Amino acid sequence: MWFVLAISVAIIWGFAELYFKKSTQTESNTLLFFWQYVLQGIVYMLVCFVLGEGLFENFRLELLLKILPIALVSWVSMFIYIKAIANSKLSIVSPIMSSNYILAVILGIVFLNERVTYLQIISIVLILISMFLLVRCKNTDKNCEVSNKKYIYGIILALIYFIAIGGNSFAEKAYLNFYVTAIEFIFYYGILCLIMTIIMFFTIKGVKKDFIFKKPNKDTWKGIIYSNLGGVIYTYTLSMNNISLVIPIISSYVVVTEILAAVILREKVSIKQRIYIVLIILGVIMISL
Image (cartoon, rainbow, N blue to C red):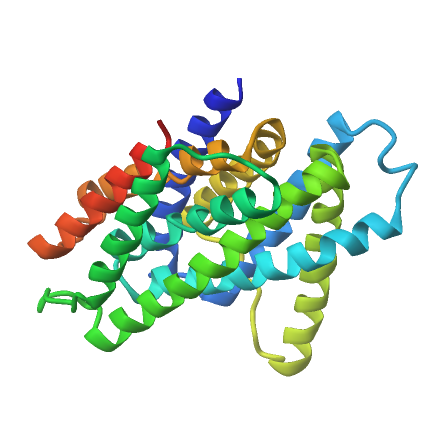
């Protein structure tokens, strides 16, 4: 069951990434971030209303405060993610960001006593080397609207995301192991999302009185819906098995992203870049076996 759910998340998040990229070309990054968490808070509350019997009546402040650090890192990571895909090619930054599970797997081995195979170790080394070589490549597409400066900026942000979300995924798994159930995590995280967006709304209105919180466009809606649907399934899947098994499979969403980026966005990359991207994807597939 967990394997089917993990594959489902990979497919859903692949489409979410496509629509987020399209949205960054027409939508304000701030608005994209804001609406992402407004809808996430609402969706998570609806899920808890249907599946979380007794959660609303037995609210526990200590659990809310325990989940707060994970929520904060998640929000910062999401803003970095949006900036990364807005400033560079999706086909370049997605393989870097999707490889964040390497850090989560390593932490899982060290602190949760999880085991990995030799094939998975080889895969991790392959991905790290390929990522290093990919980062060293310059943007060679002269017709591309992404300047080399923005291209490098996007990659740097992708690397920061790689570290932040990798550590956060491990922390979430540890919390699910020792502190909360999947539905409790969804409940308190959803509450924190709503609180954060309310604070964000009044803060922006106070600083930029002329800022307009317009409705999301079609691509933004699709990206947010796919992202949040995958988020709910992700939390349940993560609670079902070892992080070293679940996260690598979910990270294979990069395969879906690469196909969509080539077919729909028609992004062009050099032969060198393509080789390194393929090696990263190969590593993702190998570590999932």
